[in-house]
Image: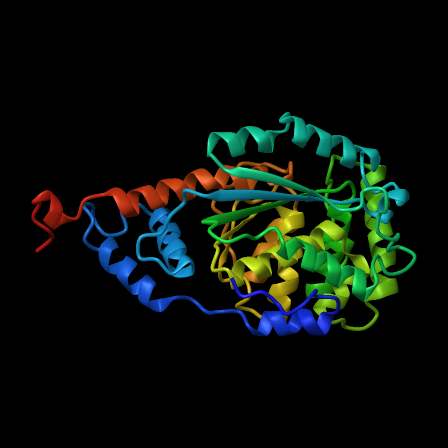
Length: 342
């Protein structure tokens, strides 16, 4: 993996890393496509499983990709905006859920175990939330860049695929504000129930976000500045992990709304920055569908999930494993002695 020289501590260094992104491995893609055409099935008969195996081959640089060493990385942090009552739960739940992850009691634990994934949970200064972005920027440039650099450390050599997720009370408020800052619109376009706010509480959440949008985005902002102004430490870390995965040629599965919003910052900087990523599922959070339209991604699953914590990405890992198993394990027509199509 190509590592940046020295610690990344500002946005200029982030942009330099982004500029060094490798492109797709077209030779591996061509070899994988040739093999796919010879497997014992009609062309296209496995639907999106064929798309997944081709994507894995293209970004791993292997005609026969692997899914033996997956990692699920969950980043956890607290948000100052939670003080405005935008979540159904208090910030203390972030730390409590981290303990639940560590003890094996969360949904993502069960799914990671089921699909033989290495689950890592990264706590990010839970006792030091970001600033309340309804009153000023959530992070300084240096803090945001360092959080992105921290996320880059989650990507090690020899990972076959990286599943990303987050935990942070009030992070759907942050994600909504990021989306509005990147793509325009107001709270009505992007804000949803998150942890379950409804009625007057949801109206209040939208009003808080609209106020923050007026404060920060009276003029168009650079995408990294958007992340610093209204993002969170865990969201910055996810963006960093996506970057490091690209350098390492590791395909990425993005979880739901907050995770995709974090990655969308990179898309806003370079429309090809997320080509090595797939979105695992369509979150029930209403802004997620709009966001996927903006970044041109089609989710693998649509099960009405809105849990976060990487659960959707871990679940979609089963599809990736199935796609790779079929592509690498099936016989060709020649191997099986079956007449191919005339």
